[in-house]
Image: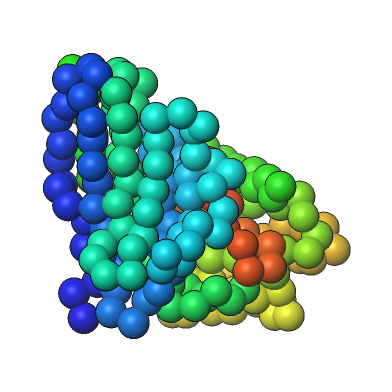
Length: 115
Length: 111
């Protein structure tokens, strides 16, 4: 089991460009979470998805950010027209089902740097 | 929504001594409390978790205690070793919803 796979590991974008972050959950997992982490800070929830369905996007900025988890393929976090404040580590995590004690496993993250 | 507070933000202990990190949560219906360890530049890794129907859980040198009445839970690391140095995050989940994380504790083990 390869675990949660995220790519790219590092992504550099200029202001105004688009950033696409990919996440493949662990085998057998159908639920994906995205978290953002600023240096020396905690993990801030962004969005929770099940295949083809957004369950909770309460942590996602209303503009420029979107997420999807299609029936086939990885989950994508998309940031349009990036600004310097978007620079952060973005972590994806997956779990098997939607249950109160389901364990959450994290990927290695994508470090986004906006120039 | 759920709010999780974590203390202290930094903690230094002598190698071999014990370390204790404490968290409080706001939603009394929260029912799952995991702890994650994050080394520099690495992913958060689950080290131990506890459900709300259990008061204490132990795994070798690591233990977690839960006080539902007071709405707080703690991580205890005994006989600390240099490799325990990392940032530790507590988290809480209400129902089937998202995990809400504390702000983290940077633990430094002094050789």
